[in-house]
Image 1 (spheres, one colour):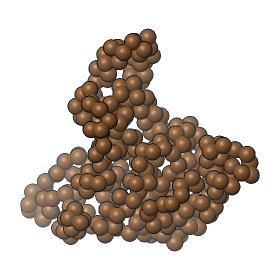
Image 2 (image 1 turned 180 degrees about the vertical axis):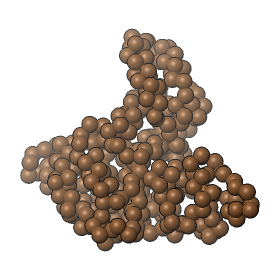
Image 3 (image 1 turned 180 degrees about the horizontal axis):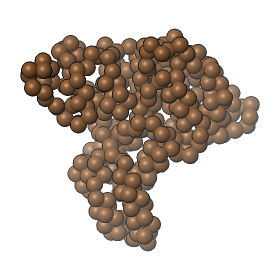
Image 4 (image 1 turned 90 degrees about the vertical axis):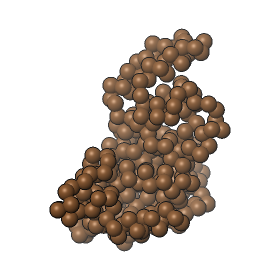
Amino acid sequence: MAGAAQTTAFGQAVIGPPGSGKTTYCLGMSEFLRALGRRVAVVNLDPANEGLPYECAVDVGELVGLGDVMDELQLGPNGGLLYCMEYLEANLDWLRAKLDPLRGHYFLFDCPGQVELCTHHGALRSIFSQMTQWDLRLTAVHLVDSHYCTDPAKFISVLCTSLATMLHVELPHVNLLSKMDLIEHYGKLAFNLDYYTEVLDLSYLLDHLASDPFFRHYRQLNEKLVQLIEDYSLVSFIPLNIQDKESIQRVLQAVDKANGYCFGVQEQRSLEAMMSAAVGADFHFSSTLGLQEKYLAPSDQSVEQEAMQL
């Protein structure tokens, strides 16, 4: 960001298909971060978003509106949204001018839900890439509706989409299974939840699909898709219930680890906290080093406890 050498900014690029809960996530995460004492700026990058439930620091609708594009260029909603993102890509000076005064805030970018923007279209990736040049360290937070776990075929499709998104967006990446509080309403899972979050041996999914007369004819295709997913071995998920603060905290820890926020001075992290994030567990030095035995420093711990009680 212009003239921002003294301050590295951090944030989340919230992506995912329509209806996965991106806007609700931005609302819940922003409230949680403020309770922790962070200054938060929510940026709406979706020109189709109307009636935003959160306080919006920057709204792309001020630059380009989806309705206007559709009317003037005779485009449908999908083509219009792609044009809006290309227009934003061509006018990044506008976005930079909006973000510069917010330096020192933690950013949440509420992104459009068009899947092709995250799988093969270049506009959104180019925007993210340019923001990293402004010393803005982003983590892509990819939300997927948890109800896909109830259908093996849909889950394989979600895995393919998540993998393609990770490879295309080119940012540190955290995949979330959203709406976990509703998953019991979608039907019984064929396997334990850990099977889906850790993306364990997918051959069991193939066996499950083989019992369906329709998918039995596509076994070889499904085998190749599963092999591709396992060969990359990149996709895993964190379950999210946006109503549960402990669930939000687990997501935040993963995001802070991915974009490096937990290694900075913003919350006075100790060396032990950094090591804990690196190994994924509490890391204890000898007491002679005078370091804390908890993940958070005492001042952080009290603030976080207050947040969890809200």
